Image (cartoon, rainbow, N blue to C red; front, side, top):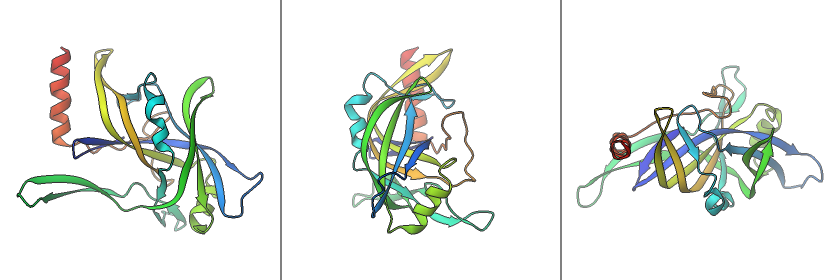
Length: 217
């Protein structure tokens, strides 16, 4: 999970996987790829999506880009890397300091639908993307790695709740919007069973989370 506070919104990134790459009734211009986006359990990094509110905003994934950056892996084969994200600081015209996230990835597809389905008796968000065949290298990597390709969604969080579960703080995302979904390289290790996590928390957010937990207590 990556958390980045930008203009009072927080970007959260979580890893997921492919369900299938459709070969039936194939379109001459794109691949159709179905992804597992997330379930509703608390992950090992103590964050989860609010099942009661997700249907109000999960449609923001439709029209969001499928992203990635192609590089060479340790075997010198073409593969995706990661979000290629960095945080930069800058000052506005009034001299006020700001921070923002910059991503060095490119879009090669778009999400066309999203739904909630049961996967192994667990409710999950699933979504289908069209990957344009003009991006031949990206399509080849997706097809070659369909069984083990991980992908990572990016959410701008607009509202969340902090609670305690078994004595530990847990963040529940109540409202947000999907801003992209990134294909990850084979060398990016999963950090927990269903999803892998990267974490770049800002000091501002750490202070906010502490204040929220103090309020709960």
